[in-house]
Figure 1 (cartoon, helix red, strand yellow):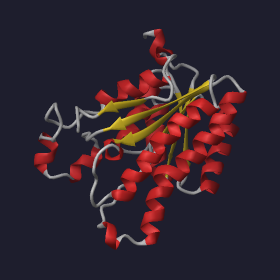
Figure 2 (cartoon, helix red, strand yellow):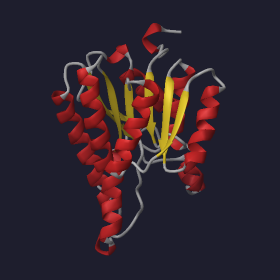
Figure 3 (cartoon, rainbow, N blue to C red):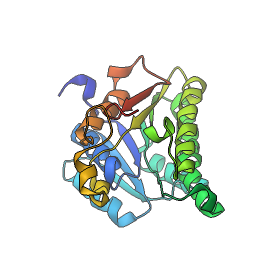
Length: 246
């Protein structure tokens, strides 16, 4: 194994880790030696992923948590530190993007979108980032979206929340420096299990420079790089992995 991408003994926490890109990232880190914490709202699905990682010989913890709520974020952090004693890599991946015309958006849905995409990641990054800064350091990766960088009619709160996540990355990278690196991956359209609900044409073609959606391994390498010593001089950055979307 390339020593730059050997995560043996490292503890990696992934929110939204039971499906989609979160699941792919959990498996990528576990396959490279990491001990993993999988968090999402449904414990059964988290346990399924945890068992896959245990089959690889890794320690794995499944935690049911709605990370749009600070009390549940704090409980997740407490469970992680109680079981592993530390977190070396935090990946804020959980999110939601329900379409709704802006003029019809109910306050409850607006709050839910901002809570899950920004409020929760802020809580996790700030609390774990402080612990990392006081300890041996670490890396935080926020999974954003090209929706924060382009017009997104009908999904405005989602784009706004992801834009806030991008801004948070830059500020926290200064606040917890030099021992903690904080970066963003701006993801485009990817073929995960979520894409099964797409129109078949969308699964083949996308309005990006490369003309197609991405495959999970094409974003896993970005996450591995930002979490590893391979990016030791990279912080406060926004890495676009979107096939050239504009």
